[in-house]
Length: 130
Image (tube, rainbow, N blue to C red):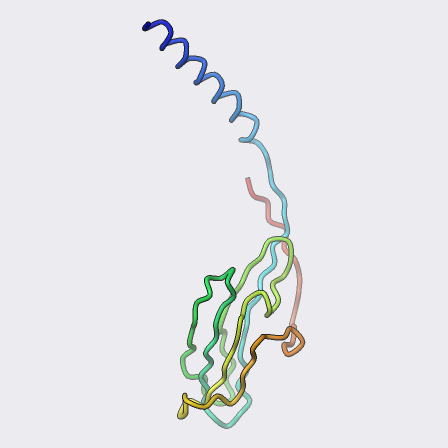
């Protein structure tokens, strides 16, 4: 009985060591894109932006701090393998409020449209993952 158990354990160790050894040296090369979303407040009013992230990002609702007049503020960073994220990949909806009145939005984007955003730069980065 002990010999059978010992043989089974040895066979199991052999199978596991052989099956795992080929995967250790694989290199996966894929492109990664990132997006940095800024709100550029060109108004004379202080603004607050409330947005809901897409389901892929957890469907969280997030609120910015007050964005003072004439200030640009980063509101979200996103990353995808294989392509650069676009606003539709990152946001379900966005509402822009005057900081002194959070009950009536100045602007509402729902659904978010990629055409309403300006791409400042775009490049894919080659990441080597071992």
